[in-house]
Length: 52
Image (tube, rainbow, N blue to C red; front, side, top):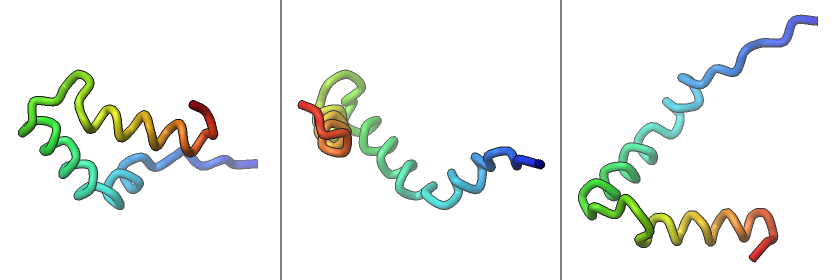
């Protein structure tokens, strides 16, 4: 059985603008540690995984 490699470039290209916008937002707000972006990520991660 031949198992194909994961094509990370194709996956990245499909969400490139969203990723770049998010990175730009963090840089513009100098929110590298803690901050709204981290809080939002933690909240969403906890929700998706049904944990506190």
